[in-house]
Image 1 (cartoon, rainbow, N blue to C red):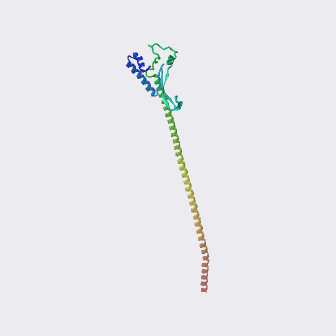
Image 2: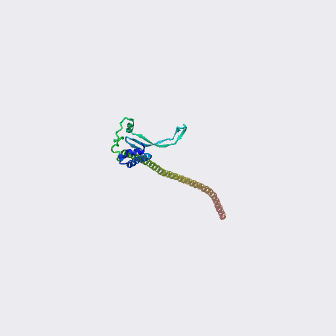
Image 3: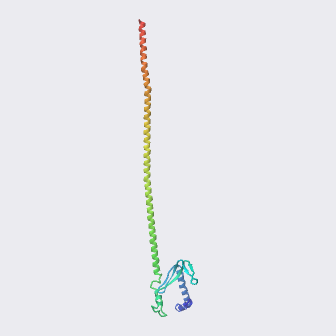
Length: 231
């Protein structure tokens, strides 16, 4: 059966050949577009259409037997449903021409796709959880960084006054040592000056002591001369 024969087979049920052709075209177009986009088209009791990725591999040319490199590619694949398999295998009887051979879709499956919606909702929930985890991790990392920076700043602040105090103590100690050195130098200079003055005054006193007897002998001579003159 080709496409034209398929259209003729369902024309009576759809009210005409044109309506049947439009319906077949619409169904096939929807299936092809969905599979190309990577979606899986599943029809209960009939089968499913999906896109399958095949990795690069080596194959053999059936005519020459030569080994050929085959590139990575994607191919469509159809998997028959269990009802379809049972009918083909003969384990189940094919219903009469007026009945539907494939199981009818369950209630709710034609009102917006419950399964698809549930999967999409699950994906969104998973994405939200992942985003929340990432945000929490980022917040924790930021908090740790801030804490570390604050600790470093506090340590630096504490170290700065300690360094200043140490420097001030060293400067004070240096000034005190300088004062002590200056005082000692002054004392040494004063002692030296006293010694020098003492040395100078000692010879002067000795000279005065030597000169004093000379005056007494002169006075004696004068007195003797006066007494001789009186006689």
